[in-house]
Image (cartoon, rainbow, N blue to C red):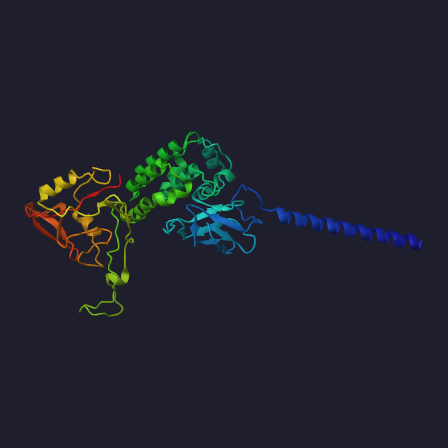
Amino acid sequence: MITIIKNSRKKKRVLKQKLVLLLLSTIISTITFTGCGGGSGGGSSSTSGTVVTGVDGYIKNATVKDALGQTATYSSSGKYTFASSPTYPLSLTGGQLEDTNASFDINMTAQSGSSVLSPIATFLENNSTLLSKFANLGLGISTIDEFTVDYINSNDLNLSKLSQLLYVMIKDDTLLTTFKTNINANEGSLDNLFLRAHTDSNASASNGKFKIRIFLNKVNSYTGTASGMEDFVKNYKNSIISSLVDGNRTILKTGQITEGYDNDGTSGTGTQDDGTLSRGITRSYTDNANGTVTDNATTLIWQKEDDNNTYNWTDAIAYCDNLNLGGSTAWRLPTIEEFVQLADKGTSSPAINAVFTNTNISYYRSSTISASNNNDVWNIHFVDSRVGMTINSFAVYARCVRSAD
């Protein structure tokens, strides 16, 4: 009897051990597979993946965090690595585009299961209704995983265009809400979605809606590679950034960087002068190698150098109207405001960026007439960017400008 009792107790002990092992195995299995693969909500599930990509031309040096505040470390090609499994949703703020070094100016998120942060992932938010509308765009893709891929690496031009469209929608909260509401379930094509965005932006109260529409047209007509998109649209993005703050006029830095002058003109401390504050958008120019220069901040295209002749006001207007340069005849005489933006107050004789060659240290004619006397016209002098008026019959130099479109 004693032996039988011992054997019975032994069997119960072995059975308990097996049950404990089975329970542990189940728990470990559950922990291992929680959050792997595509998710269907914005919860805080975790995943064993530790590398995520910030796309949109690839974003470097951004702050990428998970829901618990864990920060990922940047390596290259938009890749960010978490030291341990991240908890969703993920967020990306700040940073620069790798190809253009332009600042990235929207915040992006990724929901459970996604390894890519992009405007597409941010817009969809694993929302099944929006996803079903996107699935009907005729792109041949329908799942959240297919829409939130690294479209730069896969060279998917359609997703690159879609990302740029959503980027500009995300920049304006009111426009974003309107656009999400107005998307039809049967838009039918990416072109129709661009038309929807164009219509909504035109009806919005956004200061920069004119330049948003230009941006959308440029993106939709782009025929290059997905990886080349950011470089193509950088000028238009810069223009939109400033427009949303200051309407359709872009306020540039003056160029003055010397700081700390006192009222007597000597160097001092604690002043609030222009060199100290350096307000405005950074100046940037591109020599188009065809006699023209693009102002990357305003998107205006300028005549690289004038013809070294002087004109009265009427003849100056005619000269620019008849100019055929850089494959365009859409030239005109600049306004005085455009000339003021072009002048660089950080240099002199001439007070203009060195990309503009053979600039005369003299007056240049604007198209702006005086409000007090229509015989007087506003001009700018490139010895030091001073502004003044002369009678319209007086002969001065002319440099022409045209819009990007």
